[in-house]
Image 1 (cartoon, rainbow, N blue to C red):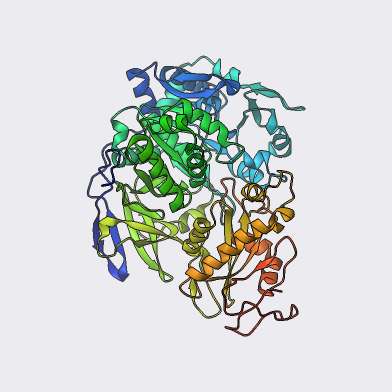
Image 2: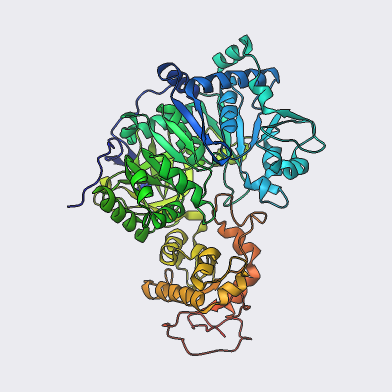
Length: 640
């Protein structure tokens, strides 16, 4: 019998359903949402009284020893910074923009802004450090009109000179920017709290804007989501009731997830503050170059709950096979794992279970769910140990109202509750269209039932409705599930895939490879050019085998991939093809690479982006002319 580590999960295991007109179904948890505070800073104050010396957050100092900030110290910092912001007359119209990764100064500034009732807006570091034209940073700052911009160091100088208005106060945690007057961050910390900050704090209430979080822009320009204190506190209470083990002991997190996204900045930081826990800021990343720091931290700190994206779990599982210290530390007291952002491949999941059974004699429950920036984020959880699979999103959290609406041949999931945004900042039309006539947020996400006869088994993610399209035959292609199949079957060599075939006879795909994995497979050096990597016989064989498998396992024209390009050119953040968190913008890729899609369906391609066709297809072995641009509907096409 399979044994799972006991972890209390009480509130998202049942559901009440009722039918409404037009095939609509309304769902909610039978467990009521318990009371929650008016302000997130109320929980910070609570723990500063109850456990003043307990570490709230820690980060390695210059890659060495941990620097700790206690709850009492953080309250003192928040009050000092809050007074400094009050003195500057900052407001929702002139908020704080934060150009920084995750660090102690960033956290103190964000909490100080909350204390004073001044919104802050963490902006993805990628928009400053990786972008060449700073288009998204310019768009975000233009939307915000900040009264103060904070940056963690001089590495942001190029972006600051390009985008930040010289009249806006610039605060740096370290260093300087040539040609700019800079306020040291320590100046804010040295401010003496006075009556002004206390009065400002007293005015903060449930509807006060706590922060602006910008959407990742995977379909269009990033929008500023208004996050109120009510949203943050309601959602943390939902999470605490769903993951009831969070109340059993102060949680310990080791976490890298970026705070400019809701998973890291709202969900995980919020869990620490709301439950009196400790957050160890992990400077690692789920990449071959960055995972070493994460592994170092996990060997030293044993989390009680661990959150990551699927790629992070892939890297950790690979390292755990030969690292007994890592296995022992990570598995010693962790109550649950949770992933979000994409589907976790079943082989990685199975290996994690095997390693846990080998090391501690039991599996660790895996949690997933559905959430988004507009809902602070959590709406549903899949919590049944042993029954959760990749793609499951579970059942509503307490306090969440779910509406399932038939739409374009699918079922859209919509949400209503105290955790849902009031709207997008300075976008009244987009805000109005985001909600239906009953006030439910339109997610654009589709779901199905695990078992339509048993709603308690929960829901399964069924893709983004806007990404789906029709073939020339009129058959709908469901992009989300097909893309998930490609990523699972192509692991670890596929970074992402864009599905093609709009108004054509066959489904195709543009595959973005993980070039580091492909180089390793081919035994090539890191400096090997992408085109050379993709020409290597071992690499070509991997992608040919992937296409053959997808063709073989397809059940019809909408799920059978008939042609592919493996891309030598990576997706571009400046052309909106990829977000800072790695999400592919299907529309932008198809728009920007329209000529390549045309070549894919002409069965032509250059040496770096070669057209692949299934070797087991009926047309294998035939070769029509390159000059034939298309063939008649239903007629197989052949690569040159």
